[in-house]
Image (cartoon, rainbow, N blue to C red; front, side, top):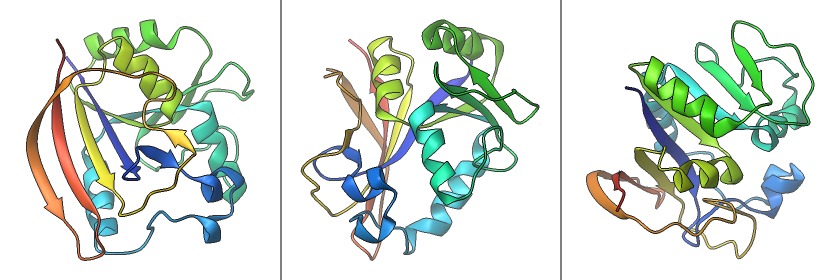
Length: 183
């Protein structure tokens, strides 16, 4: 059975995007995009065979030159969940317009791999509600942003976590890895 791992940058107040990111103006974001955590991130994502991404997260890349149907990360099969996006699925990027929960349940049963939940908050909220996320890898930025996109969208989950790894970086980012223990 496949594992779904939510590997995401987050503020101390549990937002995965701030106003700078929402407007596409990265000069205004407080999130850290440089530092010794970046090479680790690039190494970490090489373990994934596929990724799950909400439509809004996928569209964010359009502001920086990505085109519909192109992968955001080369070499990883993309499953994009959106009812509004329009593009032809291809070998690298598959657009899923149907029920994301049923699709991901089936995907977890068919595969024996690691699946990266890349974002966004609404998709993560749906998956956590249905107990489909197995592990959290949080790149906790030393920032408080006050508003933005929440880690789990509008869902307020309740579960226990088992710390399995922890790393601290010189720029203040900490990266705990937790297994989720559903009750």
